Amino acid sequence: MSAASLGGRRIVVSAGPTYEDIDPVRFIGNRSSGKMGFAIAEAAARRGAQVVLVAGPVSLPTPAGLERVDVRSARQMREAVIAQLPADVYIGAAAVADYAPAEIAPGKIKKKDEQLTLALVRTPDILAEVAVHARRPTVVVGFAAETHDVEFYARGKLEKKKVDMIAANRVGVSGSGFESDDNALTVYWRDGALALGPAPKTELADQLLDLILARWPA
Ligand code: PMT
Image 1 (cartoon, rainbow, N blue to C red):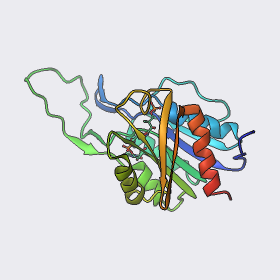
Image 2: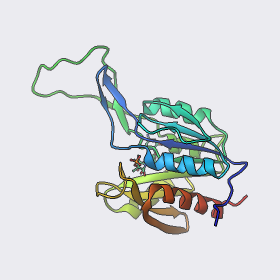
Image 3: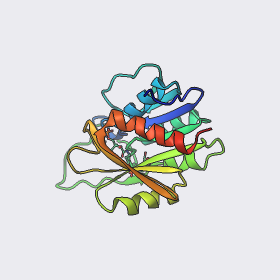
Image 4: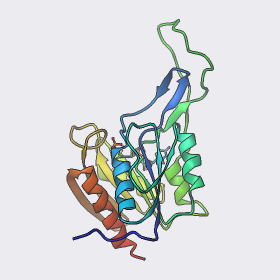
């Protein structure tokens, strides 16, 4: 059976990590490979959607039939995502850094003392901002990467960030979450939940899009 069409829909997907520079040679990053977000963007484009993929620093090729915008930091990702609104759907699969160095040192920081303290400041919460934006997409889907108490934290993010769905995955275990080709998601919305997988991220991408279509068919 062929997958249901997403023709006529404009979908913005974020993927990959963000890198928060400390100095010209060092940064704070995370383990996101971009595979989950790229799989969603690729599946949506294959099903006829007009897709913009906002990608953090990853080494993946650009899937066919979509527009890709490359960014590095959380601040740049925010600018790029907000610039793409309005859209029908926003899917935030990126692992956005929660904190960035308060200042980027202009030159390489030299080692001196036994300890070095870095001052960090909060980054913008892109998902929460999109969800209350004047040009809010009809459907806003976030992810939650959790090591424990997955439902508790995922439902907390659903409420606090005012999104329509949260796709939660367990991280810190092999075979799911960061870097792996496979994953397992539990998708939460206000009055329901559905477990997807374990399966390849490419299959989960189509299952997640099917779920979005089933709940927002218009
Ligand atoms: O890239 P892969 O290697 O394939 O790995 C996939 C993945 C594990 C990165 C992906 O499935 C995933 O879980 N992405 C979200 C990771 C994350 O940052 O989760 P979080 O629970 O910290 O954030 C919750 C949500 O808020 C996410 O939608 C995130 O994009 C968003 N967020 C977070 C912080 C911030 N400053 N801005 C945001 O938009």
